[in-house]
Amino acid sequence: MKAIQLTGIRSMAMRTVPTPTVACDTDVLIQMTRVGVCGSDVHYYTEGKIGSQVVQYPFTVGHEGAGIVQQVGSAVSAFKPGDHVAIEPAMPCWTCEQCRVGRPHTCLNLRFLGCPKQAEGCLSEYLVMPATSCFPLAPSLTDDEAALSEPLAIGVYAVKSSIPMAGAKVGILGAGPIGLSVMLAARAQGAARIVMTDKIDSRLALACKAGADWGGNPLRVEVVQEITRLEPAQLDVVFECCGQQEALDQGIELLKPGGKLMVVGIPPTLERVSFKIDILRRKELCIQNVRRQNHCVQATLAMIARREVDVTFMVTHRFPFARTQAAFDLVAGYQDGVVKAMIDF
Image (cartoon, rainbow, N blue to C red; front, side, top):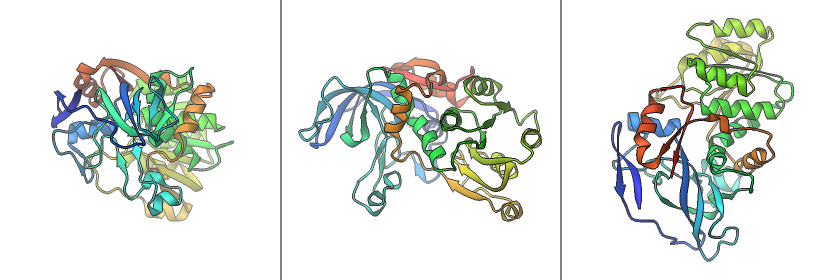
Protein backbone atom coordinates (compact mmCIF):
# COMPACT_ATOMS: atom_id res chain seq x y z
CA MET A 1 0.00 0.00 0.00
CA LYS A 2 0.96 3.67 -0.18
CA ALA A 3 1.75 5.70 2.92
CA ILE A 4 2.87 9.29 3.40
CA GLN A 5 5.91 9.28 5.66
CA LEU A 6 7.96 11.97 7.33
CA THR A 7 11.52 11.70 6.02
CA GLY A 8 13.04 14.74 7.76
CA ILE A 9 12.17 18.21 9.01
CA ARG A 10 9.52 19.62 6.65
CA SER A 11 10.08 16.65 4.35
CA MET A 12 7.56 13.98 3.30
CA ALA A 13 7.42 11.24 0.70
CA MET A 14 4.83 8.80 -0.57
CA ARG A 15 6.27 5.33 -0.10
CA THR A 16 5.22 1.76 -0.72
CA VAL A 17 5.01 -0.15 2.57
CA PRO A 18 3.55 -3.54 3.53
CA THR A 19 -0.24 -3.60 3.74
CA PRO A 20 -1.21 -4.40 7.34
CA THR A 21 -3.07 -7.61 8.05
CA VAL A 22 -5.53 -8.78 10.67
CA ALA A 23 -3.15 -10.64 12.97
CA CYS A 24 -5.31 -10.61 16.11
CA ASP A 25 -8.87 -11.91 16.38
CA THR A 26 -9.97 -8.55 17.84
CA ASP A 27 -8.48 -6.47 14.98
CA VAL A 28 -10.25 -4.55 12.22
CA LEU A 29 -8.72 -3.76 8.81
CA ILE A 30 -9.84 -0.34 7.57
CA GLN A 31 -9.52 1.33 4.19
CA MET A 32 -8.93 5.00 4.96
CA THR A 33 -11.25 7.60 3.45
CA ARG A 34 -10.42 10.79 5.42
CA VAL A 35 -7.60 12.08 7.58
CA GLY A 36 -7.58 15.50 9.23
CA VAL A 37 -4.31 17.36 9.66
CA CYS A 38 -3.82 18.13 13.36
CA GLY A 39 -1.52 20.65 15.00
CA SER A 40 0.38 17.88 16.76
CA ASP A 41 1.04 16.22 13.39
CA VAL A 42 2.44 19.55 12.22
CA HIS A 43 4.73 19.78 15.27
CA TYR A 44 6.29 16.48 14.21
CA TYR A 45 6.57 17.80 10.65
CA THR A 46 8.21 21.12 11.54
CA GLU A 47 10.08 20.27 14.74
CA GLY A 48 10.54 16.50 14.56
CA LYS A 49 9.26 16.11 18.10
CA ILE A 50 6.78 17.05 20.78
CA GLY A 51 8.62 17.22 24.08
CA SER A 52 10.25 13.85 24.66
CA GLN A 53 8.42 12.21 21.74
CA VAL A 54 11.05 12.36 18.99
CA VAL A 55 10.47 11.12 15.43
CA GLN A 56 12.74 8.42 14.05
CA TYR A 57 12.57 8.65 10.25
CA PRO A 58 10.83 7.46 8.21
CA PHE A 59 7.60 7.72 10.16
CA THR A 60 3.90 7.99 9.32
CA VAL A 61 1.84 10.52 11.26
CA GLY A 62 -1.91 11.18 11.28
CA HIS A 63 -4.51 10.29 13.91
CA GLU A 64 -7.82 11.98 12.94
CA GLY A 65 -9.33 9.34 10.71
CA ALA A 66 -12.33 7.65 9.19
CA GLY A 67 -12.66 4.71 6.87
CA ILE A 68 -14.48 1.61 5.65
CA VAL A 69 -14.08 -1.80 7.26
CA GLN A 70 -12.53 -4.35 4.91
CA GLN A 71 -11.96 -7.33 7.20
CA VAL A 72 -12.52 -8.23 10.85
CA GLY A 73 -10.94 -10.71 13.23
CA SER A 74 -12.82 -13.82 14.30
CA ALA A 75 -13.77 -12.34 17.69
CA VAL A 76 -15.21 -9.12 16.25
CA SER A 77 -19.00 -9.05 16.08
CA ALA A 78 -19.70 -5.30 16.19
CA PHE A 79 -18.39 -4.65 12.66
CA LYS A 80 -18.56 -6.19 9.22
CA PRO A 81 -16.95 -5.37 5.88
CA GLY A 82 -18.50 -2.26 4.36
CA ASP A 83 -19.20 -0.49 7.66
CA HIS A 84 -18.07 3.13 7.91
CA VAL A 85 -16.22 3.86 11.13
CA ALA A 86 -14.69 6.68 13.12
CA ILE A 87 -11.30 5.87 14.59
CA GLU A 88 -10.18 6.71 18.10
CA PRO A 89 -6.38 6.89 17.83
CA ALA A 90 -5.75 5.64 21.37
CA MET A 91 -5.09 1.92 21.85
CA PRO A 92 -5.04 1.22 25.60
CA CYS A 93 -4.12 -2.13 27.11
CA TRP A 94 -7.32 -2.26 29.27
CA THR A 95 -5.47 -4.17 32.01
CA CYS A 96 -3.12 -1.71 33.74
CA GLU A 97 -3.99 0.26 36.88
CA GLN A 98 -4.98 3.37 34.92
CA CYS A 99 -7.28 1.42 32.61
CA ARG A 100 -8.87 -0.39 35.54
CA VAL A 101 -9.78 2.90 37.27
CA GLY A 102 -11.41 4.30 34.13
CA ARG A 103 -8.49 6.27 32.69
CA PRO A 104 -7.56 4.46 29.46
CA HIS A 105 -6.37 7.78 27.99
CA THR A 106 -3.46 7.68 30.46
CA CYS A 107 -2.92 3.93 30.08
CA LEU A 108 0.53 2.90 31.25
CA ASN A 109 1.00 0.87 28.06
CA LEU A 110 -0.82 3.22 25.69
CA ARG A 111 -0.22 3.11 21.96
CA PHE A 112 -1.42 6.12 19.97
CA LEU A 113 -1.61 6.55 16.21
CA GLY A 114 1.15 8.70 14.77
CA CYS A 115 3.04 8.91 18.06
CA PRO A 116 6.78 8.10 17.87
CA LYS A 117 7.75 4.76 19.40
CA GLN A 118 4.07 3.87 19.83
CA ALA A 119 2.30 3.35 16.48
CA GLU A 120 2.52 4.46 12.87
CA GLY A 121 -0.18 6.95 11.92
CA CYS A 122 -3.14 6.70 9.58
CA LEU A 123 -1.84 8.64 6.57
CA SER A 124 -1.89 5.39 4.65
CA GLU A 125 -4.30 3.56 2.40
CA TYR A 126 -5.06 0.88 4.99
CA LEU A 127 -4.90 0.66 8.77
CA VAL A 128 -5.40 -2.09 11.36
CA MET A 129 -6.95 -1.07 14.67
CA PRO A 130 -8.38 -2.90 17.67
CA ALA A 131 -12.15 -3.10 17.42
CA THR A 132 -12.34 -1.20 20.73
CA SER A 133 -10.86 1.85 18.95
CA CYS A 134 -13.48 1.82 16.19
CA PHE A 135 -16.92 3.41 16.35
CA PRO A 136 -19.76 2.74 13.90
CA LEU A 137 -21.25 5.70 12.08
CA ALA A 138 -24.94 6.47 12.08
CA PRO A 139 -26.28 6.60 8.50
CA SER A 140 -26.61 10.37 8.72
CA LEU A 141 -22.93 10.93 9.52
CA THR A 142 -20.31 11.68 6.87
CA ASP A 143 -16.68 10.61 6.78
CA ASP A 144 -15.72 14.25 7.41
CA GLU A 145 -17.78 14.27 10.60
CA ALA A 146 -16.25 10.96 11.64
CA ALA A 147 -12.71 12.32 11.30
CA LEU A 148 -13.68 15.56 13.05
CA SER A 149 -15.11 13.61 15.97
CA GLU A 150 -11.53 13.12 17.20
CA PRO A 151 -10.73 16.79 17.91
CA LEU A 152 -14.33 17.47 18.95
CA ALA A 153 -14.11 14.66 21.52
CA ILE A 154 -11.13 16.46 23.06
CA GLY A 155 -13.33 19.54 23.43
CA VAL A 156 -16.14 17.47 24.90
CA TYR A 157 -13.76 15.88 27.42
CA ALA A 158 -12.22 19.23 28.33
CA VAL A 159 -15.63 20.76 29.01
CA LYS A 160 -16.81 17.68 30.92
CA SER A 161 -13.67 17.85 33.09
CA SER A 162 -13.95 21.54 33.94
CA ILE A 163 -17.01 22.86 35.77
CA PRO A 164 -20.78 22.64 35.28
CA MET A 165 -21.37 24.68 32.12
CA ALA A 166 -24.94 25.84 32.78
CA GLY A 167 -24.68 29.59 33.21
CA ALA A 168 -20.87 29.63 33.12
CA LYS A 169 -18.79 32.51 31.76
CA VAL A 170 -16.12 30.87 29.62
CA GLY A 171 -12.90 32.04 28.01
CA ILE A 172 -11.18 30.11 25.22
CA LEU A 173 -7.69 31.27 24.26
CA GLY A 174 -6.97 30.00 20.78
CA ALA A 175 -9.54 29.57 17.99
CA GLY A 176 -7.96 26.70 16.09
CA PRO A 177 -9.71 23.35 15.72
CA ILE A 178 -9.31 22.46 19.42
CA GLY A 179 -10.45 25.85 20.66
CA LEU A 180 -13.43 25.70 18.30
CA SER A 181 -14.19 22.18 19.53
CA VAL A 182 -14.18 23.41 23.13
CA MET A 183 -16.47 26.26 22.10
CA LEU A 184 -18.97 23.92 20.46
CA ALA A 185 -18.99 21.62 23.49
CA ALA A 186 -19.33 24.51 25.96
CA ARG A 187 -22.18 26.03 23.98
CA ALA A 188 -23.96 22.68 23.76
CA GLN A 189 -23.62 22.26 27.53
CA GLY A 190 -25.20 25.62 28.35
CA ALA A 191 -22.41 28.17 28.78
CA ALA A 192 -23.92 31.63 29.29
CA ARG A 193 -21.15 33.59 27.57
CA ILE A 194 -18.13 32.46 25.56
CA VAL A 195 -15.28 34.84 24.73
CA MET A 196 -12.41 33.77 22.50
CA THR A 197 -9.02 35.10 21.48
CA ASP A 198 -6.71 34.37 18.57
CA LYS A 199 -4.03 36.17 16.59
CA ILE A 200 -5.71 35.26 13.28
CA ASP A 201 -8.75 37.40 12.49
CA SER A 202 -10.34 34.89 10.10
CA ARG A 203 -10.43 32.30 12.89
CA LEU A 204 -12.09 34.77 15.25
CA ALA A 205 -14.70 35.57 12.62
CA LEU A 206 -15.38 31.87 12.14
CA ALA A 207 -15.63 31.35 15.91
CA CYS A 208 -18.16 34.15 16.33
CA LYS A 209 -20.21 32.89 13.40
CA ALA A 210 -20.23 29.40 14.93
CA GLY A 211 -21.32 30.43 18.43
CA ALA A 212 -18.79 32.55 20.34
CA ASP A 213 -20.18 35.76 21.82
CA TRP A 214 -17.02 37.83 21.45
CA GLY A 215 -13.64 37.52 19.79
CA GLY A 216 -10.49 39.56 20.28
CA ASN A 217 -7.06 39.60 18.71
CA PRO A 218 -4.36 40.07 21.42
CA LEU A 219 -2.07 41.69 18.84
CA ARG A 220 -4.45 44.66 18.69
CA VAL A 221 -6.66 44.46 21.77
CA GLU A 222 -5.80 44.38 25.45
CA VAL A 223 -7.83 41.20 25.84
CA VAL A 224 -7.67 40.97 29.63
CA GLN A 225 -8.86 44.56 29.97
CA GLU A 226 -11.60 44.21 27.36
CA ILE A 227 -12.95 40.89 28.62
CA THR A 228 -12.95 42.20 32.18
CA ARG A 229 -14.94 45.20 30.95
CA LEU A 230 -17.49 42.78 29.44
CA GLU A 231 -17.47 40.55 32.54
CA PRO A 232 -16.51 42.65 35.61
CA ALA A 233 -16.72 39.59 37.88
CA GLN A 234 -14.41 37.80 35.40
CA LEU A 235 -14.61 34.23 34.12
CA ASP A 236 -15.54 30.93 35.73
CA VAL A 237 -13.26 28.83 33.54
CA VAL A 238 -10.62 29.51 30.90
CA PHE A 239 -9.47 26.94 28.34
CA GLU A 240 -5.95 27.59 27.09
CA CYS A 241 -5.95 26.05 23.60
CA CYS A 242 -2.93 27.50 21.81
CA GLY A 243 0.08 26.33 23.83
CA GLN A 244 1.47 29.83 24.46
CA GLN A 245 2.95 31.20 27.68
CA GLU A 246 1.26 34.57 27.15
CA ALA A 247 -2.12 32.85 26.92
CA LEU A 248 -1.50 31.04 30.20
CA ASP A 249 -0.69 34.41 31.79
CA GLN A 250 -3.86 35.94 30.35
CA GLY A 251 -5.93 33.01 31.58
CA ILE A 252 -4.73 33.48 35.16
CA GLU A 253 -5.60 37.18 35.04
CA LEU A 254 -9.03 36.56 33.49
CA LEU A 255 -10.27 34.05 36.07
CA LYS A 256 -12.42 35.06 39.01
CA PRO A 257 -11.41 33.84 42.49
CA GLY A 258 -12.06 30.11 42.70
CA GLY A 259 -11.91 29.81 38.90
CA LYS A 260 -10.34 27.02 36.89
CA LEU A 261 -7.72 27.06 34.15
CA MET A 262 -7.91 24.11 31.75
CA VAL A 263 -4.59 23.61 29.92
CA VAL A 264 -5.46 22.02 26.58
CA GLY A 265 -2.88 23.47 24.18
CA ILE A 266 0.45 21.78 23.40
CA PRO A 267 3.45 24.16 23.55
CA PRO A 268 5.45 23.60 20.34
CA THR A 269 8.91 24.09 21.87
CA LEU A 270 8.61 24.96 25.56
CA GLU A 271 9.65 22.30 28.06
CA ARG A 272 8.43 24.40 30.97
CA VAL A 273 5.71 26.96 31.54
CA SER A 274 5.21 29.26 34.52
CA PHE A 275 2.39 30.86 36.48
CA LYS A 276 2.22 34.02 38.57
CA ILE A 277 2.05 32.44 41.99
CA ASP A 278 0.87 35.63 43.70
CA ILE A 279 -2.27 35.73 41.55
CA LEU A 280 -2.77 31.98 41.83
CA ARG A 281 -2.53 32.13 45.60
CA ARG A 282 -4.75 35.15 46.14
CA LYS A 283 -7.45 33.91 43.77
CA GLU A 284 -7.13 30.27 44.91
CA LEU A 285 -7.20 29.10 41.31
CA CYS A 286 -7.25 25.52 40.10
CA ILE A 287 -5.15 24.37 37.13
CA GLN A 288 -5.92 21.15 35.28
CA ASN A 289 -4.26 19.60 32.27
CA VAL A 290 -6.39 17.94 29.60
CA ARG A 291 -4.96 14.79 28.03
CA ARG A 292 -6.74 13.91 24.79
CA GLN A 293 -10.21 12.41 25.29
CA ASN A 294 -11.53 9.87 27.76
CA HIS A 295 -14.64 7.79 26.99
CA CYS A 296 -16.01 10.71 24.93
CA VAL A 297 -15.92 9.55 21.30
CA GLN A 298 -19.28 7.78 21.32
CA ALA A 299 -20.96 10.71 23.07
CA THR A 300 -19.39 13.08 20.56
CA LEU A 301 -20.63 11.09 17.57
CA ALA A 302 -24.11 11.04 19.14
CA MET A 303 -24.01 14.84 19.59
CA ILE A 304 -23.14 15.27 15.91
CA ALA A 305 -25.81 12.77 14.81
CA ARG A 306 -28.45 14.61 16.87
CA ARG A 307 -27.30 17.86 15.22
CA GLU A 308 -26.55 19.43 18.58
CA VAL A 309 -23.30 20.65 17.05
CA ASP A 310 -22.23 21.37 13.48
CA VAL A 311 -18.54 20.63 13.17
CA THR A 312 -18.15 20.66 9.39
CA PHE A 313 -17.52 24.42 9.20
CA MET A 314 -13.99 23.71 10.43
CA VAL A 315 -13.03 22.07 7.12
CA THR A 316 -11.64 24.99 5.14
CA HIS A 317 -9.34 23.12 2.74
CA ARG A 318 -9.21 19.73 1.04
CA PHE A 319 -6.28 17.88 -0.52
CA PRO A 320 -5.92 14.55 -2.30
CA PHE A 321 -3.75 11.96 -0.57
CA ALA A 322 -0.88 12.56 -3.00
CA ARG A 323 -0.71 16.26 -1.97
CA THR A 324 -0.51 15.67 1.77
CA GLN A 325 2.70 17.69 2.11
CA ALA A 326 0.99 20.72 0.58
CA ALA A 327 -1.69 20.39 3.26
CA PHE A 328 0.95 20.27 6.00
CA ASP A 329 2.75 23.31 4.59
CA LEU A 330 -0.53 25.22 4.49
CA VAL A 331 -1.38 24.39 8.11
CA ALA A 332 2.18 24.96 9.35
CA GLY A 333 2.18 28.43 7.80
CA TYR A 334 -1.37 29.36 8.90
CA GLN A 335 -1.98 30.25 5.27
CA ASP A 336 -5.16 31.21 3.44
CA GLY A 337 -7.37 31.25 6.54
CA VAL A 338 -6.88 27.51 7.11
CA VAL A 339 -8.56 25.93 10.11
CA LYS A 340 -8.76 22.25 9.24
CA ALA A 341 -7.18 20.71 6.17
CA MET A 342 -8.75 17.38 5.23
CA ILE A 343 -7.00 14.65 3.24
CA ASP A 344 -9.29 12.75 0.86
CA PHE A 345 -8.37 9.23 -0.31
